[in-house]
Each structure stands twice: as structure tokens, then as C-alpha cells.
Length: 508
Image 1 (cartoon, helix red, strand yellow):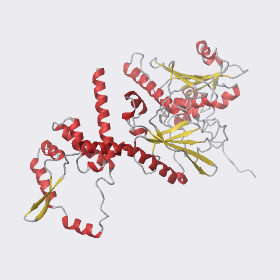
Image 2 (cartoon, rainbow, N blue to C red):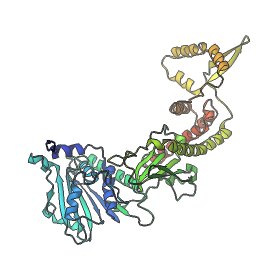
Image 3 (tube, rainbow, N blue to C red):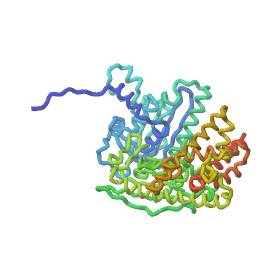
Image 4 (cartoon, helix red, strand yellow):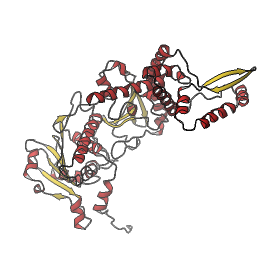
């Protein structure tokens, strides 16, 4: 006997509005559309962002295989192909949601026009406002050539096959902005720039080499951004390693990028990537050569630090690894299975060690050049045969605090109290009982080390030293002289900021 049941279809309005909240932004949404074009064997993809105030529009066109009427209806269905379904080797899809979810995250009206070989041009549309107006909750997918004006039909007229997406009513990007709203127009252009950077990064392996594709943004081709600088002579690639778990293989290859002194200023700035050098260190996860994660230590207990920024590690997955790597709908997050953690940590430590070695070498050079006059925070005094330790009042940071405070007497009293309350007997006893148990300076707080370097450096600058003198003093100062790689990384960062400021002043 069959069980009793009710049909509980989701309401179209409610579900569509929920799908809009998946967390896409414009770059990740357009990347999802490009995925579909690549899967359809497109050689060219054209993306046009047209500003017209509230009537602004985004058009995405490709010269791929196109779709028949049945194929387009299937493609417009939410969940058209589930994550457990077997996919072709070159399929960049995941949940069967990409085209619809990515599109409606940015617009309230999605129209798709497609033409396949030996097939007529077909058109389908999801219009969220129309669906809401019916009051029925039905999934009414509009159809018919007349949904689009003749000028839109001309977009595919010269192609044998292909697909075009029209995004109208861009409420997330434009809203009801007027045509002459300069702030909204500037934001629109800034998002176009963000799209260019994102697509150049995500599809860089498709944009170069044999059988490369071309992505055109507002009529201009997008150049690939290679995070590994594979064509640069000074790059230090490490051997690749294949990790196996179950029936899956993961190919991991670390790259150690060159120090900025070995690159031109233009090349170094380009290699920094959309978010900057520090942000782009770590693992780069690819699925079928499509980038999912751009620079992340994947929750493996490692932090992003200045002296590791030259370490970038490529990880290649097949398209059957989606579930075990927890790839999300937007294809912008991945987490490795627990069974691979130790191997990935081992490879990451090796790459980070190689990257830090570059800064360690530079830090030691700095110390040899500039570390003649050490500055100590504590001074050692002997009175009447007894030893005392006092805070050095000439230390740059101590001088700054004393100079900036409105209550110098209170600060001096605090310093005196710290000096008088140094637990010398306890330190002596603990050292005798466990001489190797003492933690080193900043051992568990690398971020505090960076903040301390910055505070002392700029304290010296505020007190009249030029930056070169301040760098020399910092190189010989306790405890910073024990951290040559961090020191070199910090001073490189200061120099880079100074260079950017000077460049900005020149432009003005």
C-alpha cells in the first residue's frame, strides 16, 4: 500500500527571492555565467555593461553550441542538474543553479536567447515582478520571440550558434538611479573594473595557451592574471606532488615568487593581484582549471604574514571532488577533506619556509648593514653590588609615550612600579627548574610583533629621524633583531607604501 502524501511545491516568488540571497556579487555572478559558456565550448564570450541609469543593462553573449527549445527550458529550470549527477570532463557546473541563481542575484528580469545548429532561435524569460503580479505562486517561464525587440535579435544574427543573456532591472547594482547620477555611474564603472580583475584571475588558465578562449569586457579583451608568474625567470617552482584519497587524485604544486627587487615595478604591482600581496598568499584551488579559491591557508592553522607572501600553492581537483571539498554554489569556497590535512600542512610548511628564507636572507643583510647600534628596552644597573633592571627612558617608543601623554607623572610612576616589581626571584627559580621552558619574545603573537615594529618605527619617524635612519635603528633593536625575515617584510611594506604615496602625489 502506497503511503499518503501531499504535494508541497515551493512558491515561485518566495523561492526566487530566497535564491537571490546566496551571496553573489557582480564578479562572482558573471564568472558563473562564463562557466556555462565554456562548458558549451564557446571560443569567445562578450560581456557588455551598459549604463542607462535605472534602465542599465548587462548583456552576456557567447559563440558556444547554443540550445534547442527543449534544452533551454531544461537549462532555465532551477536545479536542472543535481550535484550528484555524472558530468562530462569539461563541465564547470555544480548544482544546476548557476545561470539562474547568479543572474537573478543581480537582476529581476533574466531573458535568454539561444540558437543551436539546425535549430531556430528560442527565447525564455524569468521575470520576478511578473510572477509576483500573478498572485498564483506558479513557476511561469515566459516564452516567445516577441519578448525581445528586433534590435536584441540582431545580437545573434551573424552567428551560426550561441547564447545571449539579457539582465534587466539591475536592482542590486543600480536600483532606481537616474541617468545623470554621477555617484551611481561611478559605482557602476568601479564594479566593471572589479569584474575585469576577477575574470582575469578565475579564468587565467583558459585565457592563454593552446585552445585559449577570449573574454571581452565592453569591447576590450581581458588579459589573464597568472598568480604564479610562470613565465618569470626568477620564480622558484617546487616539485609537484599527487595526493590520493579513495579514487580521487589531487595535484599540488608550490611556487615561490621572486622578491620585488627581481621584478620591475609594473610587474610587481600586477603580480600583487586584486587584493594585494599579503591577501594572495596560500593555496589556489582549481576545479577543471577554473579557479575557486585565490590565496587561502584553508583553515590549516596558518596565518597570513608578510614574510610568507611569496608562497602560492596550486591545487588541481577534478569535477568529481565537489562534495568532499565542500565546494559551494558560488564556486568561491573549498575546504579540504580531513584525510589530506597533514599532507597539505607539510607542503605548506615547506613553501612557507622557502618564502621566509628570502626575507631571512634580506633581514640578515639589513642587520649587517645597519645593526651597529643596538637599542635595548631594559638597562642593566649594578648598585652596591646588587643588580637592578630599569626601562630605558631613551627607547623611541617610551619617549613617544612620555611625550604624548597628558599625565607624565602617572606614566613615570607606572614605569617605576614595573621596574620595582620585576619578579626576579621567581624568574631565577623557574629558569633553574626548567631552563628550556621560557617562551621567546612574541612567540605566540606574530601580529603583536608587527604592531610593535610599526609603533617603534613610526615613533622614531615622529621624533625627527628619516625613514632610512629609523630602518637602520630598528634592524639593531631588541627584540626585533631576532626576527630578520619579519623585519625585512615590514620594511619592504613601508617602502612600498611610501612609493605608492609618491606616485599618487605625482599624479596630482
